[in-house]
Image 1 (cartoon, rainbow, N blue to C red):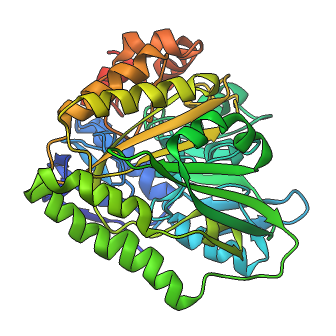
Image 2: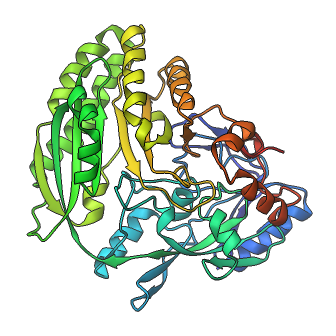
Length: 439
């Protein structure tokens, strides 16, 4: 099976539609060998190379005017190792396919983000995460990586093999090479009980430390222009399985969270004055519910309403102050914010440029409906986040640069030195990497 190369390439767009690129050519390799050949050929032609997943990043992390590598033929499970409890998957495998395949094998990842449309390599490379008291991002569950470096060679890394590459490449933002396979730690399939319930903003912020400590996975959404939040606690359960019924699942997840929400967003975009009223109604629309299911069905939910997002990780102890400042800023402004603010946590990890690197972290994500001006809101929010030494998600909107990152990541220089070694000619460079990592 040969890789497909389209000589003249169309315009590539990301999921949110806020990033476009016109690559010189696109390549869809069917094997690691074909990918290595494509990398060497690009270098010989003087073209930059970027791999793209499903385009769920809001930044131009994958944009290129050179060679765009599409990984859709590099998918599937290579190996399940029950003795070491790991699974090795091809880099282009969508998280959805991985989750379903693992469940069939009676296995599961420990933690997940809140959607599963992304490829495994795209999700891990940008530091995608869910929420957890002890369990970290998807990248924190990686046990081994295989990547094609700038000279076309294949480099394998783990805690034992090339450990200095392993420390950085788990969240490599596409700067160190093109990932071709990932080995994840897995565990026997388990059940989670989710408890979703409304709570006031004042109560959730004053009781945040207890809510975090009492639950394996705690998160909540605050609805701007209201004093209301919707909380979600996920904890392991002995069962029995009690999934959301099909009808109530459709009403809550499809109709309210996607269908009606989309309609409300369209009204709000057309008539911004209606947004505070819509927010009051939205914040009370979802009722309390409890259900028990296998992990990926609890962690993830469908997201059909398109938006633009900024998310920052702040030190966990700074979360409540950050949120109260954000609420005060919205309350005193004339901005109309139609999307809830999402709050999650992660424990410190040992990945060089993970947003939770070396510190217990809390995430605050602000969103705006696609097509709505978001700059004023995001700029004001970013001012608050950066005052708390915030670290932006690598795949979400932000305005920070290498100088800023050098200040908030103690091991920033370790990452850039490794990049100098693995990609001295900057084959994998693009405008986004030039800004965030320096020339």
